[in-house]
Length: 321
Ligand code: AMP
Image (cartoon, rainbow, N blue to C red; front, side):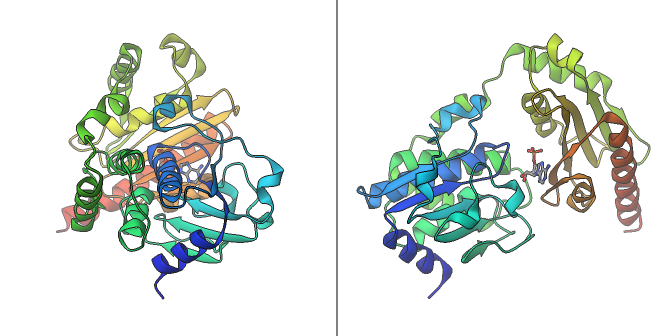
């Protein structure tokens, strides 16, 4: 039996299902989990299905989360989406569930589930949920398809990144045909921004340091965040808008995160492999989209040096072609 069928069998078996994802959720973490909940309930209306983890106010439009309570551990199955390791699971202890399933598209870090469906060539966890639906008797509806579409578009940055494949388009086409969602109407919620955020983006562009090796970075302290009336998550997200700058191969935003009293860092690349570097700094993620957590800005200088070196190495490979 293939993994999709095995997962369907376990979904059918358990009446209580908890769905979790990584800390600091992005649209894919939220869209994939909330979309999976919708499709399970649409197929099996009598089941209890909960999506847990700390809410992220700016992504509230994707859907509401359930508050986790300890009785949810009893006789229930956990499905963890978009999360490669135990320490990044938000809000639940995976060892307390009767059965655990992992569905993920990050590079493998550790095994923690009874069934692990991992495909690091998939664009997003949402894409994997669409594939699960297509390969089983799960019945999608509009609400599920909208959430999965948002997750997939979020992680591919509107089909821009290299892990957007032919299969991505086939699965998107499948879910749109099945449910007839009005997908263009979803973009306003996803991309509407305050003028302050755009002004902060201008500040970042005006003050970005770009090294000779093609690494771009900026450090944002609390004063800057206060000036633009924003927070670390929103500021770091601007990293996605710096993709095609000539001569810049990798770039990062380092931002003080008041809530956690540490430095949140978002790193992107269009060549150098960055997740191996990020993983040395309490971070991780994908080859070309990674993040890290640092105790202070001094440590960020070490990370900057290593990322700069990764750019140098990459530059040498492309100039030798
Ligand atoms: P972000 O820059 O927050 O959008 O994250 C980009 C990618 O890196 C996502 O796949 C995250 O799950 C991952 N990531 C971000 N921060 C961390 C971290 N501190 N540890 C491990 N992975 C991370």
